[in-house]
Amino acid sequence: MSKSSIRESLKFNNFAQDASKIEYVVIGGGGGPRSAYGGQSGNRDGGSGGGGAGGYRSSVIGEQSGGGSSAEPTIFSKTGYSFAVTVGAGGPSGTNGSDSILGAVTSLGGGAAGGYNADAVVGGSGGGAGFRSNWVYLPADGTAGQGYGGGTAVSGSRSGGGGGAGAAGGDASNEAGGVGVETSITGSATYLAGGGGGGSKAGGLGGSGGGGTGAILGTGNDQGGVSGTANTGGGAGGTEGSDKAGSTSAGSTAGGSGIVIVRLPNKYYLSATAGLAFTQSTTGNYNVYSFTSGTGTVTVI
Image (cartoon, rainbow, N blue to C red; front, side, top):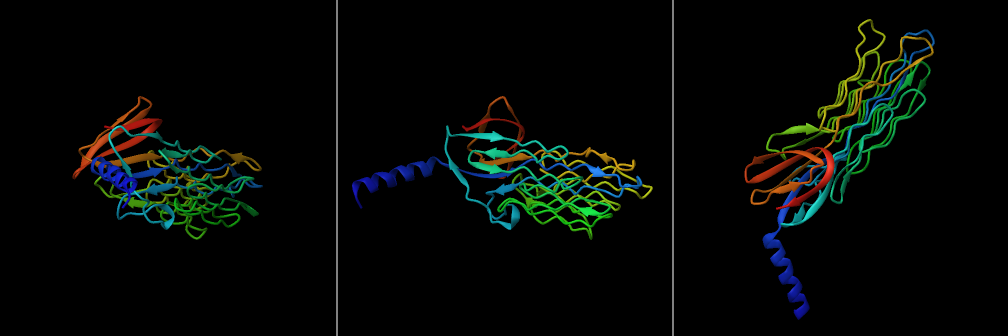
């Protein structure tokens, strides 16, 4: 072995001895719903799909990323290393969720749902399809390695669920949001990044992982949609049509905000700049940091 190769090997070994193996789950904000059409006779025969869940990227050993992908490589770092962190907001009506970021890892916001005069939008997970009395609006795909696509609709009756990180949104037969991905990074198993249920005459259930339930319309027992749960990246529940003929109703729900979760050996800690809100916990021999809002810089200490 040459002298230069020996020097590089020594540098690597010294780094490895002091390095921390950082595991993460990074989830974008959930996608919003869409306006819905009230129909020619004011009978609420329009509805929007469910919002897509935020993109889900994970390096937790033995777990998965979104879209059926394997976990990504862990990050090796050491004392003094810094990373940029941004927690994505959930999207309001007609809008994708915002991206969440950990260093070079970006999880896309969930896609907005399809609804009045607009198809669904591609995102971390895709938005579900919407409908009106004689028309359907197309669902959208998810992003590889982050989430699945939204479900399809049937004109005049049923919309599609928003895609989840763990499964596609339900088609018009059930309209449920796609399920999220289960993680135990905090020490307790939980699902995150579920898609929003479609808004229709039945109303789709939100996907496990914070997806909002879709609105129920035109049944005499109308119920509004439900927003995605904060800090899950859950998609918004779909919108019901207006009760006024020829008019539209704006989506009143929103996607759930995203989250950035970091786990590292308990001999290391993280400091964060003032712009980031977070909680710290322990599980086994690890410190766990859950960043719940804001943007800033974290440093290994």
